[in-house]
Image 1: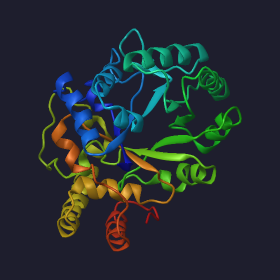
Image 2: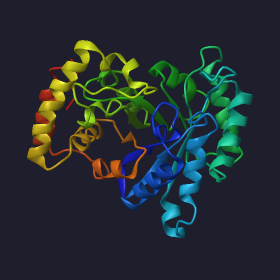
Image 3: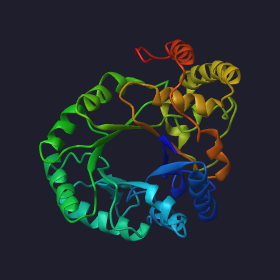
Length: 309
């Protein structure tokens, strides 16, 4: 089993990823299981109708008892679609309870291994949201709880109500800010740290060329890092990553993810996929040997002021 990798299910929801099919989504999850991945991250808002939850549930059907016992499911509540089809944060206790109940029903399980507040709702005190998750734990619907996309101060406020067992935050070689803020705080307070955007929407996977034109409906061109000089600088970094990857017998994606999980305080990386063939790129990712870590650190230092290892 690879405890360093969590399959993130946002891509299989098909909201911002073009060409996703239910068949491929289910096959992707099953391929991940066959490759030794046992942790899966979903959310109430992953899909206009909860597609990620439903497809995860379908993929888990018919697993043998031994394998099913190993599966860990991370759920998130506190974000949903409004009547205009826009995702909004909603941390009201009553909403969190209903969304958790519905998400569990869609997956076909009774309890999350970890249930997280997806985003802090600026209109609702975070202690009130934490209180709702505490009640869900007491009802046996979650074994432990955590919070995503929160500052150290917000994490502390959450933890004043109920222990915060895990956080989620962004981290990749081009965007390392959390290494000096959120991650050290979490480590000091005994939180698991699950990092996302480790491939920066595929840019650090090494398969997007400089002249690549994204399909209509693909959300990635809206991100600043996919625009102008920032994108060209990222491609310069990827060109050098390809050389290191070739020397070490890894793919660029594997190398990028392995760098992330090599950072102090990081427990595991959330990595997305929506086709089975994408799994092999990262299924064996894990902490890098010291010499390789040093090479990658020096390379990423040209694009970041972080002191990452």
